[in-house]
Structures are given as C-alpha cells and as structure tokens.
Image 1 (cartoon, helix red, strand yellow):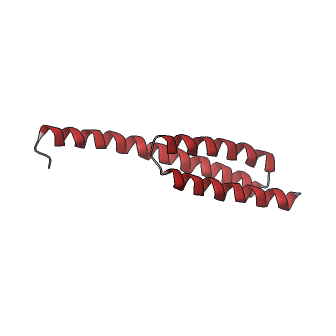
Image 2 (cartoon, one colour):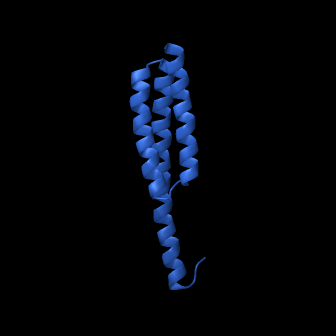
Image 3 (spheres, one colour):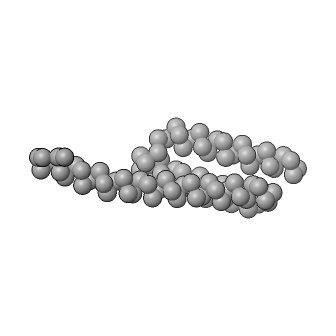
Length: 91
C-alpha cells in the first residue's frame, strides 16, 4: 500500500487511466468484430466501410498511447489483407 502522498496520487491516476484504456481497447475489439462479421457475410462494401471505421478507431487509440503504434499498424495491415482477399474472391 502506498504511504506517501505522491504515491497515493499515482495510484488514483493509474486507476483512472486503467479504466479509460480498458474502454478504448474494448471499443477497438468491438469495431474489429463488426469488420470481421462484414467480411464473413461476404459484403465487400460493408466490409470497406467497417474497415474505414476500424482504422479510424485504431489510429485514435495509438495517438493516445493506449496501444503501441506498431501494434496498431500490424492490426491494420492484417485487417486490410482480409478485405483484399475478400475483394479478390468476389472480383
């Protein structure tokens, strides 16, 4: 348990940040799930729109340092590959 005032404050700040970061990560996971559902349904246009929204959410999360920028880049790359594979199947 923290004893000094600064350590107690740090515990309070960390608790707030943990809640915010968890919420952001949860939103990203939900958005990725929506994209994958669109890909599974085979609808290219819906998948493109969901990818756009997912990339936007990932970029915002990386900008706030909730997720590392390289982790975000890797996720975006993998999701784009899924969309391209779907588009080439349809095309």
